[in-house]
Image (cartoon, rainbow, N blue to C red):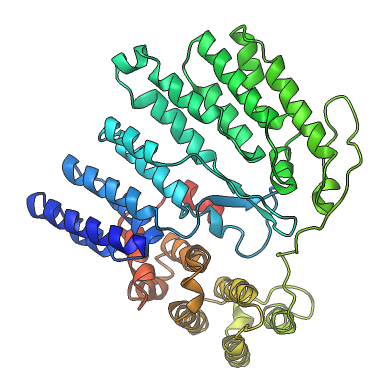
Length: 456
């Protein structure tokens, strides 16, 4: 596999760098490089941003390694619900920042503080996003906002005064303003242009270029519905107002967008998104042909999953509908029922639907961990959950999804390390190298509440 060759090359480069530039995090970085690509890249970027890392040459090498290693990740882009609502137990997995685009953009951002020319070079290695069509069966759409945020940052910070005088930042922005293939790109491109420090004539050219790209835009209904979720004109953001303040005619842009919206509303729609479509400015939404709709992912469907859900409810909810108290959950009878339930959860193999099994088994374990009182009961849930994650084959082809329950567990444990000492210790000593390293990183370089809040 290509990513293995990248890892070997990065390891050789790192060894040479470490020999001449030793620092306390070299061994940690070497451990990170041995992980699968998305985890290796994420860990390297966290390590290189640690306080006290001042070796510029080492930083440059580690950031470049992270950028190239990230290319081997399984998920090309971040994803989110098409309507902004939670879609199920794993809908937050794709917001962990472990997709190729996000990791590489993070590397570019880190490199800007070290070597702006190298940052620009790395960014130009990234191809413009090419987003696949999303079917009505899917509930998630691609999110490439970070790509265009990074493009704006590169335009603002990665050019010399001479290059700025030669309009090179403008040409960078022009390249991406004219190259969109999905309606979900319109809003981030409009935001990119709105944030740019450019001349009036340049803004006019960029807006005209975006209008021309919108005029050729097709796209699927899922992506279209995500683009207009905040209102039919929400995708353009503040760009029309910016144009007005710079005396740039925004009518061609607005007209192109309205024409696209009207054209799509008259085309094939997904049944669930068609029912929620806001009316375009100045009129009613026209009728359209209707296709299928997304399979609900906020509820399970197999008999085993439904039965385990009912058993869990009986385990943690009293007959009066209230969650059992800590005292009630500390009895010997409840402990016996907990062991019986964990045995049933362990036996659920989910051979008929591995994705559903993994998603809901993770969900049930996490609920139990949160609701069990501190002590033997919670320790038992933790050991069962870790044993299952550590030997789970789902991670081979679904690494981002597999890591989410472990990541959430790490966040909870280290946010309450004083009362979860056993959990912290077991995470640090996990037999899985990804879990063990990320637990150590959380202890050494704890993420802020802002970085983790959306994942819980």
